[in-house]
Image 1 (cartoon, rainbow, N blue to C red):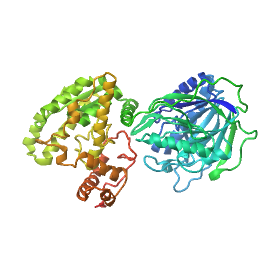
Image 2: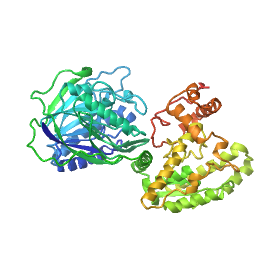
Image 3: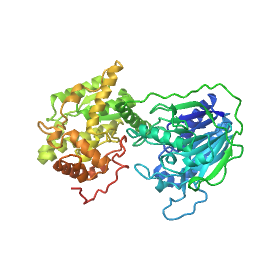
Image 4: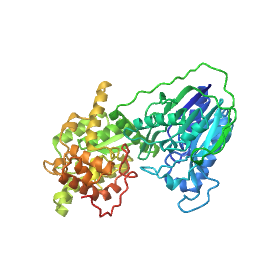
Length: 583
């Protein structure tokens, strides 16, 4: 057996910030080396950020990434860190690829490199390319065809990138075929609810298939709609968890491992899926025996509601900070959606950077006005009230609107007011719509859909209530003031655009609505399957028609944090002009 101190750096990146990302890698690599690491690793495409989308098709960006990885190798050596191999993800291109139909121009690759002594000693590209959900990697990349193996401290370490573990075959059985002592996979796997459990079982299974200890290094942070939840995992060949990193945190997971020593001759030839073994030796002999200092441990797991709430906070914070927005603006109605959005915002960017405006009309209840003010007092956000009645009266006198047009006018006046304040004061507006409302079109274009980001757009209404209750309970457990007024949670939801209005005037009960939507939107079930599951046929038909008709509205809604397997946007892509109806 040989000893290896492994450093898994669970870090964040910003797409396109090659210099900033390289400096972050350098900083964490220095920390790893100072802790005595023998092998240092960083996530998938950490140098470019992930996902780069159509930047992968821009030759100038690909070349900048290739230059950056060589520059990073030299910087590591110049700072005295060059003796320790560093695995880093970046954007490359295939030198041998010939242009052909169906292949992205320039043959870009989702790649990683091993840096050592100022040089790029080994490069490899992702073998399995995902093409589902938010992933479009067939559009952007050409696959790698090698099994990269690097010998460190006398241990053969097989290398993989994300989807190489999620798909059967390829680098996992190939690692067993070459007798690897460690399989290291670098990843940028986005967060989804319950994915941590799926991920754990996957790594356990792959470790047993590979016949060796397997390290799954994940990214942390956020990028546009995506959140990366960390949760890096190291599993033994028997499937037992050795170590697990915290969720949603940048951290360095250090671990002393005892691994099988490599055979004398380096592996070579062609193995599983036609992969050609590409082997490099960094250090052929094990180091003198040392006393292990970093033992396996599992960071505490978050409960479901805490996990989702944290993902929403991280997603909003990343969007605001990475895009240079110092403050946010929210319309506060006194209702549950705007209250939860405000609580998330205060946790994400600080209450001092959150601005709330109550915009009551003639139909606003006194308790809603009171609840909005109480929310501001509880959280400490900046608060003001601007009556929309004079503007509303002017429009009504000029146009004589009635019914739905009158209701929507109020929402649009509020949207215009928020955007005016945004332009004047420099805040970005947060749209407080939830997934239930977006699904059935229960939102007003250019009204409550106004905003630069929708923090809760992928959260169903029933879960909105759960998250609000969890956030208040967590505050009480910490001895803090619960941020959300109890009445905002307990009163019947209402847009308050007409006398005595409640949401159930227009929609089924949210519990029924959400269970139908989860089957139709998230599960892609048709009307017959949903009715067969026990739902009323008339209600199902009504919900599905509303959902189909609202596609044009969803296309105009701002981006927002994705927490489900199928969020509106990149996950679910349907034509706006669409005559197909399930019922």
